[in-house]
Image (tube, rainbow, N blue to C red; front, top):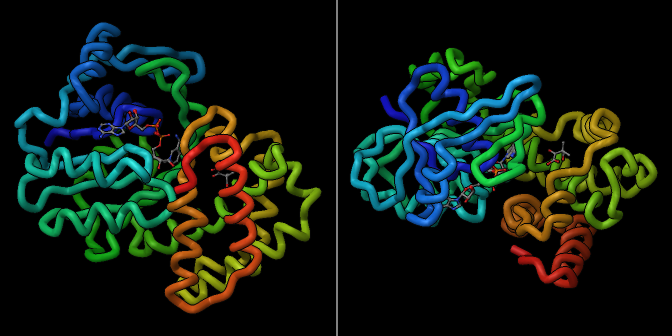
Length: 303
Ligand code: NAD
Ligand code: KPL
């Protein structure tokens, strides 16, 4: 069965190249005809890995193509996912499967609400990739991808294709706990790296601030029925700060490059859920306000 990949950016490109070189049928869905023409001029997608750079001439198309879609990897940013999926919705066969790679929470529900006849599988990935040129992806960090479906616990048979493609993954019956935990880690680390203009490791010098934010995130996770995702959060945050000390967080890099952040699906989602549970989280509120003010000063979107 063909893997249609919506969004040929960093993570979409990384998946596409590995699936294609495993001999699996892959089609990239690019935003428009102009991008398709640029892609064709380049002759395909390039993946840069340690000691190996290869060009993969993967077939590509625009959303307007009519070929039916049975399996769709959605690899856009969280803020683009719903609209991107809407553009191919008419091509999805009944019972089509979507794999949603978006970080944070909120975009997955928005996509699922639009497609009641499709199965939406959620993913949480720690793999690292970035684009250094158009349609050229650098595989920057080995990682792992958790996959799961909160509505249907059975694993799909095609997970074996991911193994064959060398994509490290595991099915989980509690993908929401994974997504919430990653959201909490990202909320505890990423905004502070932007506001203090620092690498992850320098947050060790702001230990009290980090501890206060973690305490509120634990309250939120418990209120949202995610007690297991709350366990040992502060310890893990401090561990990640230490283990990734030399790195700039993804949000720091987005802001530094003048790109839109996924704040609405991280802190924004956290506070929206706190509101639903009548929970007062003053430190998270203040963090959100400071981050929004910072983005406004830089002329970047705040949602
Ligand atoms: P990216 O910006 O590199 O790629 C997104 C791609 O989607 C772009 O090529 C963009 O042009 C395309 N796109 C947007 N709207 C589209 C549309 N309507 N039709 C077709 N294509 C469209 O983003 P990324 O870094 O690959 O991130 C994707 C998601 O994965 C994000 O939610 C991110 O947080 C998450 N994630 C990324 C990494 C990473 O290392 N890059 C790791 C873990 C999770
Ligand atoms: O996932 C991350 C990111 O940069 O987005 C880290 C820093 C590891 C945790 O927030």
